[in-house]
Image 1 (tube, rainbow over the protein chains, first blue to last red):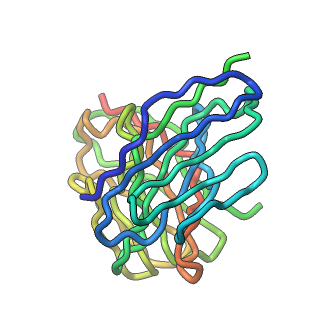
Image 2 (image 1 turned 120 degrees about the horizontal axis):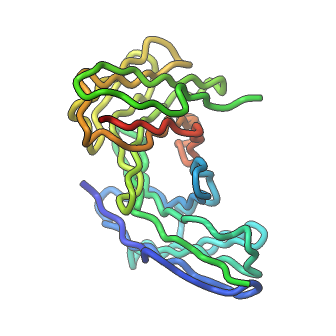
Length: 111
Length: 114
């Protein structure tokens, strides 16, 4: 199957900026999404990129470079509540519209 | 409140028993999915359905079956549970008319097979 790579852990302090990278296999790529999951909770949608460039939503931004098969999630002005797991997910073209998820990045925000 | 409801929220099941995890959505989404989440492995797709009446296999379908008799319901059945099926199971849906870019997840079912 298709595979995605993202760091397993990232640690940062409150108020800082952190970038979580994601690389993916190119074949059949349609778009890159990001999800947030707090411990014991359900994944929730953060952003989606189908075209190259930066998408900004408040403190969170997501970037995609299709030529590099690479994207990242940028979190600014980190808050303690941002401590969670962050998953990149790729939608591949074809008859099925399912998302393939990376293994997740555990973000810990320190005071 | 619109969304996805999963039941039960948790279950301890004896190996060899049959179990159906229920999933219902009221958003009229065409596409629905079942994922399992294991520590360090992220979310892995078990089965999916693009529309009522159709289903497909995901990355880890063995030991599981699904049905999609209508738009709202997408039950997942373990015919004969084994300990390796201990996991957290998430049901999700997306609106295929928008390209399915955003998936909405239920709160999950924590299943322990002993």
